[in-house]
Length: 156
Image (cartoon, rainbow, N blue to C red; front, side, top):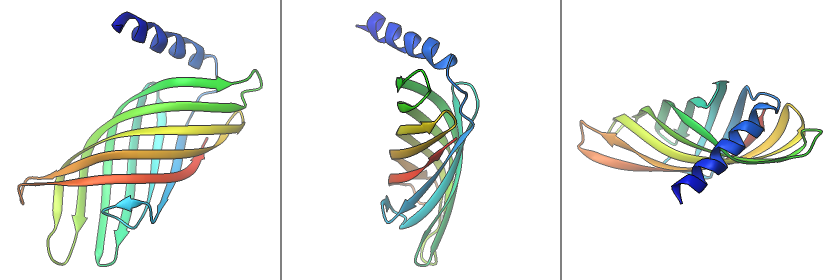
C-alpha cells in the first residue's frame, strides 16, 4: 500500500513539473472561519513543494495574525494540454498565530492541514477553494484553541 501511494505521489510530482509554475494564492475567509469571522491570507508557492503562508483575521473586538510554512503535495492535476482544468493540493503547515482580545490574548504554536481545489481558466490564473482545520496551542493559558476555515480566492 505504501509503495502504491509513493508511486502516485511521484507520478503527480513528475507530471506537475511540466506544468506552469505556481507563484501564490490569495484567499478571503468571509463568515466561514472559526474563531474568526473575517480573514484573508496570502500563500506563496515560490519554493518547490513548500508553502509559506501569512494572514490577518478579525472578530468584533479581536484581531489576529499568523505566519506558517510547510510541505505542499499535489494530489491530482487534471488540467488538459492548454493547462486549463482542476488541480487538487494538500498542505501541512505549522508556525505562529496570535490573537489580541480585550478579555484574553492568545499566542503560540499553530498547525493546520489544508486542501485546495483550483480550477485554472488560464495557465497562470485559477479560482481556488480552500478548507483548513487545525489549532493553536496557547502556552500562557495552557489551552488549545481550534481553527476551522473555508475560503475562496485566486491562484496565480
